[in-house]
Image (cartoon, rainbow, N blue to C red; front, side, top):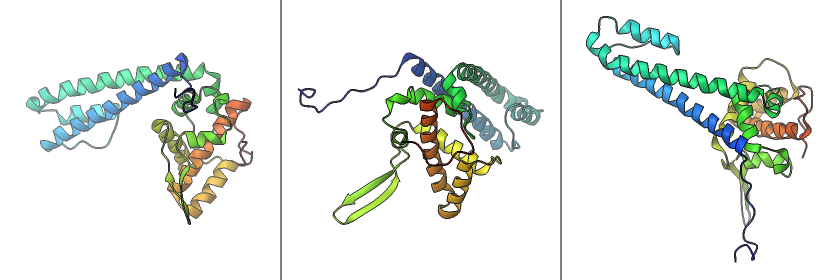
Length: 242
């Protein structure tokens, strides 16, 4: 009866390849999170005994742990099994990262999207898996709203103002786009029309609002690239296609 009354609409299902790609991204992210949690746990336990580890990740962290445990046999019997678990998690995360890089390298969409400054393998893969096909959206601007990067609008009587972004849709993809925007604003030195626009916006409205606006702009640009099949043009204007 709901279908006959027009109160329902068709929902697009994810394809197998996109689901596989998203599962790989999620599994890798979970292992990275577990690795950080495990290293923090080791640091906290050793700090209880006055053993403060200096900053460092990866092999530097492991070397610092072993150095500080020298002569602490009783504590070492507790910490070393945790360190071994940390090593295993780190190894498994590296294996999934290799799979992700290989998968992105064999996907034309991901190779296209990584031509955008600040967009790496993870962001490109996550975007390609989420969007799947450019025809799934009526226009490129709709992607910004779909990923939750457009401001809410409040209208009631004489009240009409914009609030914070809606934060709807894929939260991780939104976070990755924001990270890519932050890289463009803070780390990149290459000149492009997009970065010049973003830096000017940061001067007017501050970093956070500029980063959100740039993240939304990146989503629109990346969808337009998937639609046209063209690489990112650093000299192109920021007027975006519909």
